[in-house]
Length: 341
Image 1 (tube, rainbow, N blue to C red):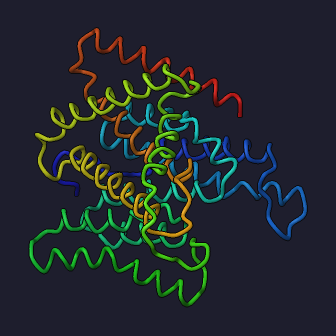
Image 2 (image 1 turned 90 degrees about the horizontal axis):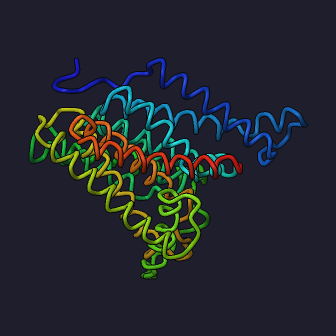
């Protein structure tokens, strides 16, 4: 039973079909460029099996995104979210060239889905968050923080029971550290040295460039790019804020659309805090790249799509025309970049 205004997250036909279509597309792109292979196998088996991991991760990501969008905004939101995520300029290029970014993105989407579908099953999304932070990519350092914060916000009772729920969400981190110590395998290259480094401005600049590439695809550096990114960011923030205020905030606390906005906000905020802490405190940590920043872009795209679909019946004719024009320009620019792959 799902209480309130909530649709269960299920493996319906559309997400399953999206999984196979996108997985096949990513496999074909990676296989065509012959970037991945399996050590110990001879061609053609090696080149055929090499891109399987990235293909599965891409399919899982879009299937989860589609399920989340359908649950929060309906079938139309699911289809639009699928198209928008696949057309993000960094999505296909990352999946055909990286073995770290695709699992990071897929498990981040899974963590969001677990947070949304089972807010009190803290061990589930805590385990996914710990797996990402310890064994997939240091860029996911903030996901255990998101798991702990979400468990704290949605514990059934206050006091000791609430902190027990938080401890249960963070327990997989301790278990993962023990496994790391015992097995010697993790996502961190070498020992971790903590020291104040600063450099937050460089990290923000690097992350901002990646986000800007998704928001204004194909525009070169210059005044036009700056204005498009600034205006686009303001429009996006305004749409999300209005959608939350008018459609989600008045709902009961356990309504899925409301939980969707809250879970997305908690996850993105904690993820950003993790990236900032990694940059400023860990010696030798690189600035955020496309693999590290793409989860933020995907969750942001998902929230924007759901917000637009939920607000669509309330918009005037002029607002609908403007949204269609802006969306058409973005899709056209993204398709041009995608064809270059």
